[in-house]
Image (cartoon, rainbow, N blue to C red; front, side, top):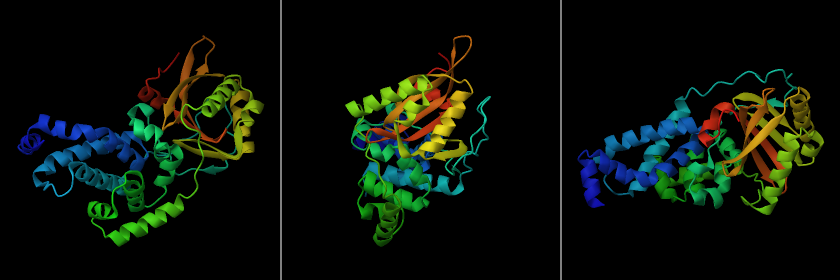
Length: 316
């Protein structure tokens, strides 16, 4: 490894890639947690690697290479959160459907899903909550430094002193930020394990209800405080009555769907295809389910532009 480091310091690109390749996927997920957008995360990861390449001669080895890379990535993410021109909110654009009155307007319209294929198996199964849509969304509402501290300490298990060094801060400041961030994210859901019998049963029931446009069956799967969102459109529906009203508007307009299963953020997800009169299903978006026990507590709909990331076609 010392030989590889020496060659990388001397400007050998292959050696630098060999040094950093083991960390690229976890750094991408780190940037995604910080930013809430996989596209932004990919951009910041490239900035991180370029900065690391340029800064490698100054790397003194006092911290591990992994820790140093996280320092570079975290600070690039903080810069992005302070200066980013986030993706703007979008108007209602569901054809031939009159929009029901939303419960409220959401602020995190730049949220995007991350395919499970990009997650390390440990993140997928042992740390599923740390990549869940609810967790990533909540992070976007916190001050940037609190987000960085919470992820570095509670998700990645860096010591307080290491985090203070990464952020050019004090241990006391890190502890204070962590306390405030934990308090803000105290509410948690009890999702069943991925692939469990409970998850499979709820998912099968959801698919049957959605594909048959059976709103009553769908309502029977929802928690009373179920939450529905659809970034980049800011419209949100909270409570079983509001979500049922939304679904009746969609199905009442004659839209019928076929669902193709996938996974996003460690959660069940589906490519949604509107059945056309020609027999072709046209991709309209991606649905991600959040489960609480044996009920659905959140349904998030993303636009069809994300389908390709999941290996899903635009039509079936």
